Image (cartoon, rainbow, N blue to C red; front, side, top):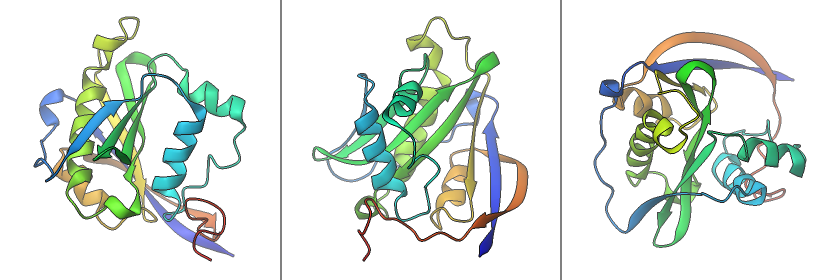
Length: 188
């Protein structure tokens, strides 16, 4: 059985497009994971996307994960709530000054606390200044991302409130697979 999934692609074409979000309440810190770690990246991916059908990377090998996290210009920025990883933004520097927000989100326990808008604004700002940390990369001219109808109900609104503009919409048929949760059997 399959389901129709709408995929929206959004972009910013200037750092002035970025609109800030309110600071969340509490001890929320955002830190770059500077040591590439396939294990940590897979943990974040599973913790954040396990309940919203993120499954495209679940079958990747350790070597494939390593290749993703060790690419020049790849960055992972992690939001911590009192020392606990709450969510992350994964940046993927592409050709010609383009940076994709490849993955972004919060683990279920941290949603609805205004952390997401703050993390998205912070991560987008880091996409715009990525060349400052990677001198071999050209200055960023465009930041883009995609979201879909399987993502959280507030995802599209958050992206648009941060200044992202819709530039493409597609509808695809995807297998209706069970949501795995952050680990197999988590929702059993």
